[in-house]
Image 1 (spheres, each protein chain N blue to C red):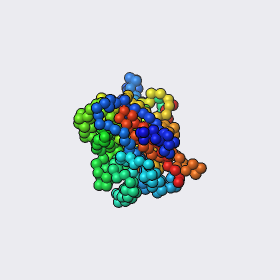
Image 2 (image 1 turned 90 degrees about the vertical axis):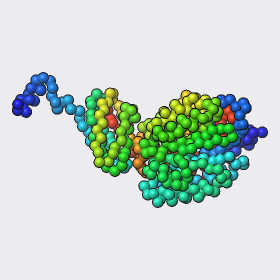
Image 3 (image 1 turned 180 degrees about the vertical axis):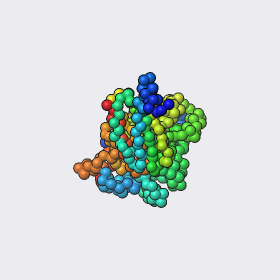
Image 4 (image 1 turned 90 degrees about the horizontal axis):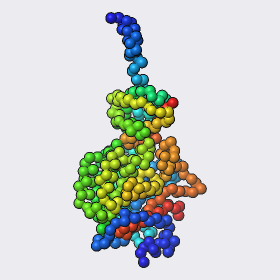
Amino acid sequence: MRRRHLLLLLAALGLDARAQAPREIELTARRFHFTPNVIPLQAGEPVVLLLRSLDFAHGFFVPDLDLRTDLMPGRVTRLALTPKAPGRLAFLCDNFCGDGHEGMDGIFVVT
Amino acid sequence: MQRRDFLHLAGLGGGAIFSASLAGCATAGRPQDEFYFVQLSDVHWGFQGAPNPDARGTLPKAVEAVNALARPPDFIVFTGDLTHTTDDPVERRRRMAEFRQIAGELKVKTVRFMPGEHDAALDRGTAFKEMFGETYYRFDHRGVHFMALDNVSDRGTTLGADQLAWMQAELARLDPDAPLVVLAHRPLFPLVPKWDWHTRDGDQALALLMPHRNVTVFYGHIHQEHHQLTGHIAHHSARSLMFPLPAPGTADKPLPVAWDPAAPYRGLGWREVEVDGAKAERIEHGVSAA
């Protein structure tokens, strides 16, 4: 079956594969910054963060969602989240990484 | 006359006195008697920057003030961040050696050191152990049990399974009614998680402490006084000897409060803790320019 026919069939069945895939957001950690550090999200929208550390086993912690992971250099860490309501969700490095660690943070702005 | 009564009569001896129960403990029949110790914290030796133009002078001023106390404390404890962090292992040891030399000028020679993450996180406590010994330990003093915890050597700010097992074994040997003072660098409870002001597995430590009816925790890390109860356990943080930090949760980031030339050393200080069986009194001292 040609790809065009397959897509038409999926669309007819209400199964648009592209619409179901969560949006992916790339995020890089490097002493002592996250890039980007202000990330707009929409309430109820599932997203997957693709987290990369360039230099250290940073932590990635979202206290309000009780969500955290370690970011090992050379590895991409996938973290799924769905913000429930509009607001601001702080995230931070929670593995002490040196002189500047205390300012290594960012914010999800959920609308 | 007890020492605190004398201090009250003498105008507080330069500090401010706060009383708190060291947990309403039953003291009958126990060999407890009044004593006091001094807590100094968050020295950050090696820090340079606008938040403290007298970065090399503040610790010596505190040492001088402690040495001038009318009656010397039984012992002194530094609750972590003796030095400001550096990536350079040689510089880390140089800062620790310099700090130790200045702390060596304290007249009281029983001085207990604890690490903060600035001392110990980047090398998992290696330099600290070389210079100061174990990162967690227990001791008794005049009928009061003391437990010094390490929630900083693990970069993830956990106590870890080994230390929690050690805690459990040590606590099992203690009378649950006896007064117990816990010393730590970071808060054991989630004070401001978005500022990393917590201990990731602190809830497990507090669960182990809960059966003990007379527990008081003295800690540092947050560079200001803060007083909170979790259940019956009282937690008291100490001021820093380098720079103050904002009140919990009141700023975007926990970055140093600017130095105020009109009020130099404001927000910096140290404390005496007087233990008298059922009571612990804090006498808070600021750092003065003199």
